[in-house]
Image 1 (tube, one colour):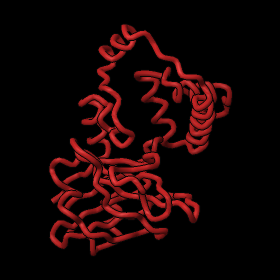
Image 2: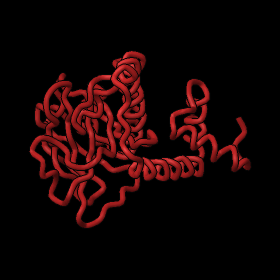
Image 3: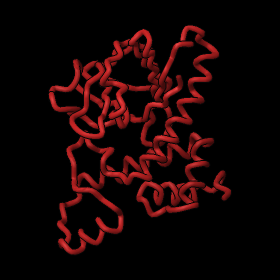
Length: 234
């Protein structure tokens, strides 16, 4: 698939990718092309913003119950869950794939970190938190021995003075557990509580919150921006 120089094709494929009509091998191929093409990623992001804005103004439509049951059966959907339970909508196979991809990305990032930072030799676990385009934005490393957790921002994150990022451990059952509000710095060290890295933790997530963190004691109040799973190293 030759996309460079063919703007019409690039636009069409980006739109189909966002709409979800680009499937199977073609979708995977497009994702591979985005990895090495910043302009194509930008085009896809622009289509996501356009179509997302249109969806906000679309009137609600309630399908017939029989239609919805057929859709649920075919797609293996679960009943709607609270906003912070976004990860529970997917199938087991999808989340296994996500875990493998996150582990691979985290391992690659850790190699780079270890090469530059010898003091990370005791890192026991690492997680690569990615955005909607699967680009790593934050790397979280855990030191079980010293009970410390380091959060490092590896990509540009634009926030206003009234906004903050909040890190959560999302369990397989129950409410998300706040691990702390992230400051404006590129690197932050936090205590590593047992509930941050227990066997019941499905993944880590970062939400966009008001300055000071989520006002909702039950979980994030803002959208989930980044997510990823732990990879056990030691």
